[in-house]
Image (cartoon, rainbow, N blue to C red; front, side, top):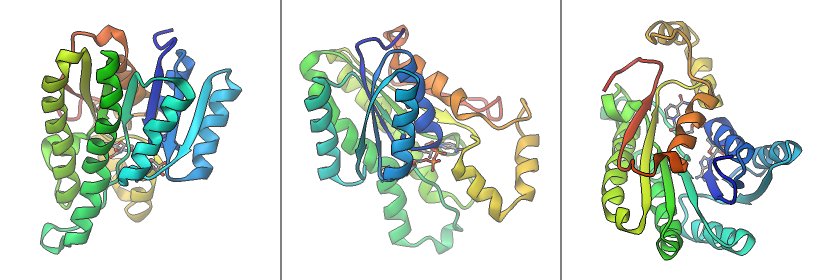
Length: 250
Ligand SMILES: NC(=O)c1ccc[n+]([C@@H]2O[C@H](COP(=O)([O-])OP(=O)(O)OC[C@H]3O[C@@H](n4cnc5c(N)ncnc54)[C@H](O)[C@@H]3O)[C@@H](O)[C@H]2O)c1
């Protein structure tokens, strides 16, 4: 049990990749703090963890709002006394030709993908520094490493997440805190299903471009996140790992 006695916050844990991460960590002994702005899916995640004999609490909160983020950190301390692990998973992409990109859409995607990472990291790092222990895993995207047409705001934000990871990793190593980044390729979640609903012909094309000829499962991503969040990765920090079925190699 890699996470016995560990307290792990997973943002955006109501569905998709975040849910798979929270479920896997709880299965390996973590007390999971599952955070999402959607109370219904959030309850599903927590119930399925408890049904399997795991420990979890839910917090309904918006990770782009500083007051919600600080309530998340405070509630975790009140309930479990410490924060060992943070997974910054909240994020969203949209498509828009760059020349049509509106300032409001840029601000929205930067807030969801990048500012949320800054706010949550700041809120938990204060606690981690006091304890001299912590693991933060940020979810970026291969899109941020390669650049994708019509995704300027998203790719800029996700590249920013990788940059923030490197800087925080350097700044926090002295406190025995590791900060790494997982960059998924295409993952079979609702976010991708919504995209396919608009362009069903895309799915086959996208799968053909992946050497393993399948989308990633959320559990494929959770496995990499759990490695970085565990003590097996104690000497690894500031890294970005692509989990993409070999689609793009860095
Ligand atoms: N699915 C993919 O192919 C893919 C690829 C690369 C990177 N990613 C990244 O992985 C992460 C998870 O993606 P997913 O596909 O599981 O997404 P998803 O849309 O299926 O799930 C995201 C969850 O985050 C929650 N959420 C959204 N905004 C929030 C906010 N402001 N505060 C709190 N909760 C909020 C949603 O309610 C939802 O439960 C994202 O950062 C995404 O950019 C996904």
